[in-house]
Structures are given as structure tokens and as C-alpha cells.
Length: 303
Ligand code: ATP
Ligand code: ZN
Image (tube, rainbow, N blue to C red; front, side):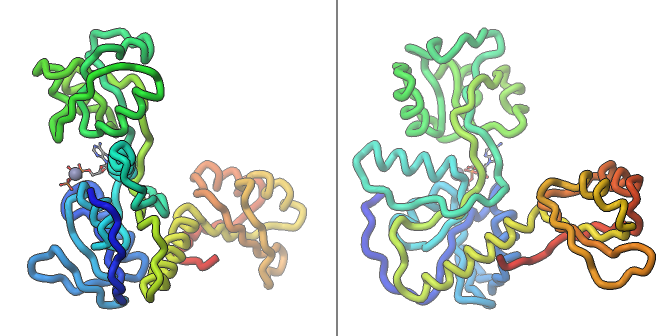
């Protein structure tokens, strides 16, 4: 962690992503969906952008916030949990904010939770008073405890947090949970959520003021297009005019019904739906008088 030096002017954008791990593949897939491609370098730490001047740096996720703070990278894809931990750690030692989340990316969902031994009965946060809590997220946990006026020992561990209670190095833990299976395997149970997290695109607090700013704006616009269309479906169907009110009532509230030219006995219609449609919904729409139903995924859109 270092203060933010003025970043040198560059004309290529540099994005840090995880080299190996849970966020590595989805991050790369998302950037590919944004139209980026790279020439792989032999050491695979740096990938030179081919379709656009946007290069990739493949690193450990823990290093991503620091690389943005130091201006080595312009953007990074990292769990909000990691970004917020390092942001809080900076604040706790009086350093200014250096990075911020720009967009949520819809993958890497997890929760930072308190896990207590199965045999304990959870009666509320007051029972944490004086306890030893093992975690890899000491800054988030410290801030969370302080907000609740709880004095507990924060035991910082870099890995295998969930075995700390069995080893006797802590009484309970605060760790990332997605299914809860790891907690159960270690005779722990989740009791309290400290933070909900997803992967985010993070960028510097400071605005870029060279050609990278345009590249960044373009990338954000494409990401917004992907986010907006992730759930969108286009429903096409035929129906008689008098069946339309009954059919419209079965469509998602956000649906926007448009009449298409053509169609002799019945109307040809399409509806843009902000959410997916289940088989059951489609069957109900058909029973209400629609025919020739077809659901199409929306691949790209520019708002
Ligand atoms: P690295 O070698 O890059 O430091 P790591 O072991 O810290 O890897 P991963 O286990 O791949 O990282 O987790 C990366 C991120 O994935 C986490 O910071 C978190 O945002 C997210 N994540 C989603 N589900 C989970 C989970 N069940 N456990 C841990 N992390 C999860
Ligand atoms: Zn890590």
C-alpha cells in the first residue's frame, strides 16, 4: 500500500485480472464479450491487446487494488470483498482513497460471514465480546466490530481460516461462504453476514486525462450493454386482437409489446422482456391465445 503517485501518460489501457482462481475465467470471458482479444505472451503475465490497445496483466487477486493505486494498471477485476478490505486498511492507517468500484459484474458472488462452532447457540453479536475471531479480512471485521461496540480479538490468517477453531487459535471465524459446505465440513455454522460481495470492475479514484479515458469509457459502455441484456429476452408470437389484454396480463410487468407488420388473421407481435420466461409462463401465454411462440436471447445492445 502506497500513496498515489501521478500516473505516467500512456496510450494503452491496462487491466489486471486474476491469473488463476475463481475469477480468472469469468473475467476473461467478460472482457472477450466486450470485444477484446490478446496475443498471448509466453510467460502469460502480460497479454498484449490485439483488437484494441487494451492489455491484460495476470496477477494474484490480492495485488489488484495496489496495482491500481500505484497506477501500474488502470482497471482491475476483483472481488468487492478484497477491494473493500484493502480500502478500509488504507483508511485505518490514514491513507487517501485510491480506487473505487465502477461496475458490479454479476459473478463471484459470495458472503463474508461469521462461522461459529456447531454446538454454540447464537444469541446475537454481544456474545462476540472478548472472543478471538480468525479472518483474512481484518480491516472489514475490525470496522464491523467497532460499529457494534464489540471488543474482540481479530486473529489475521492468510488461509485455512476455517480450521482455526479446531486448532485452538481462535474461537470462531469470519470467512467467505458461498454454499456453506466448507463451514459444515469443519463443524462450523454460518450465523451473521458481514458483507455481500460480487466481482467488480475497479478503477482509480482519479480520472484519466489521456487517450485511455476514451478507451475506458468505451469499455464501460460495452459492459453496460452486456449487463442490460444479460436477462433480456425477446418474445415473438401471433395472437388475435381480442386475446391481447389476457396475454399482456401474463407478461412480465416490464414487457413492451410491439405490433409487427404482416399477419393475416392474427397480429404478429413481439415483446421485449426484462427477465427470462419460464416454460410454465410460456404455456400459460399459449393457453391465453398466443401461437407460434418464440423466445430469443438479446446478444448486444447500445442504449
Ligand atoms: P489468488 O491466488 O489470486 O490470491 P485466492 O485464493 O485469493 O487466489 P480465490 O479463492 O480464487 O482467490 O477467490 C477469489 C475471489 O472469488 C474471492 O476474493 C471472492 O471475491 C470470490 N469468491 C466467490 N466465492 C467464493 C468462496 N466460496 N470462497 C472464496 N472466494 C469466493
Ligand atoms: Zn487472493
